[in-house]
Amino acid sequence: MKLDRYTKKLTTDIFLKLLLFAQLQEIESLHVLGDSLFEDQLQIGVDLDSISISQLSRRLNGMNPDIFQLLFLDLVLKFI
Image (cartoon, rainbow, N blue to C red; front, side, top):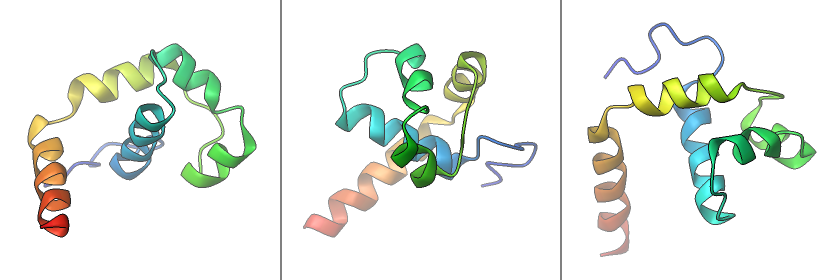
């Protein structure tokens, strides 16, 4: 899959890391997730210093759901 064809800043890898962080930290909105990027550890972990809410929203809306299914199935297979 060509997931990052026109992506400059918010690659699939970075976006999935942000979603994982949001899930683990129980972050309830994209606004709070965007604000979380002010934390130094998160900036280092995802190699991103800031991102707009609109970029996060566009990326989330543009993600192919098959990616999440493949990721989930891959994780399940590792624990079987």
